[in-house]
Image (cartoon, rainbow, N blue to C red; front, side):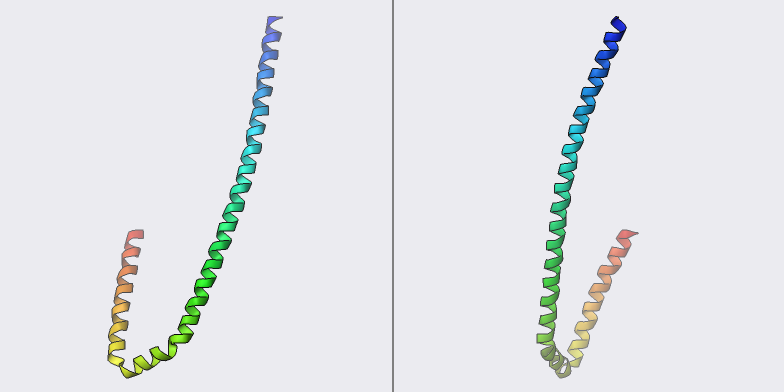
Length: 102
């Protein structure tokens, strides 16, 4: 009879552990849903901010294209030198990043 009591106790312990595991899994599921909702909201906010920044840059470009065009026409050599400098800087940055990734 002692063997049956021992096995019954083991089965009861196992059942209690399973119930505790189910409870913990339920809590984990709720936490995962909250996290997913929070990440979705954060991603939506980031997309909205990026869209607003894009719109602002577009508006700035449209507003300033005339003055940039006249500056380039008035001083073409200076515009060329500035363009070459910016190209060299960007090229150096991209070259450095490609070397770091290799």
